[in-house]
Length: 169
Ligand SMILES: Cc1cc2nc3c(=O)[nH]c(=O)nc-3n(C[C@H](O)[C@H](O)[C@H](O)COP(=O)(O)O)c2cc1C
Image (cartoon, rainbow, N blue to C red; front, side, top):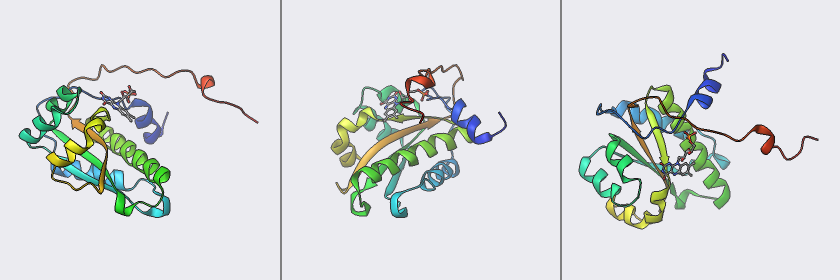
């Protein structure tokens, strides 16, 4: 396969274990930039981000989810939000957020970093907003945990293609 884009799509795995090496602000900004180049309905770009490297804040966020060990292990986090004052259509804006987050995962892969999309913490959206001192116009979509991969042993499976295609007319 010669396409770097297809290669990144197929090679990307959720990375949950990291080395202690710092993730630079430059890399975090590049990952966010990839996110904001995702498509959005009417090009309304409803996404907003908080970058977190501070250990105390990571500890506080870790306490909000059963995946806290990943948050504690990751040297950097990006909280991805929808700004509800910038939204125009609930379904389409949520679709845009998903596209944004996937771009961020692929950008992390392209930069030699490892990332995982954390959604379980959405059960504690309000607590996270309080911790990050954000108002409730901001609706948490995910926390992306990012670091330098500790290893590349991750395996993942997909059901066969035929399970998903309903019809080919
Ligand atoms: C909406 C969403 C929420 C997720 N939430 C979590 C999570 O809270 N904790 C976690 O470890 N992984 C989470 N993941 C990652 C999935 O477990 C992972 O993508 C899936 O198992 C497939 O593995 P792969 O990404 O390595 O292909 C989430 C993924 C998505 C898209």
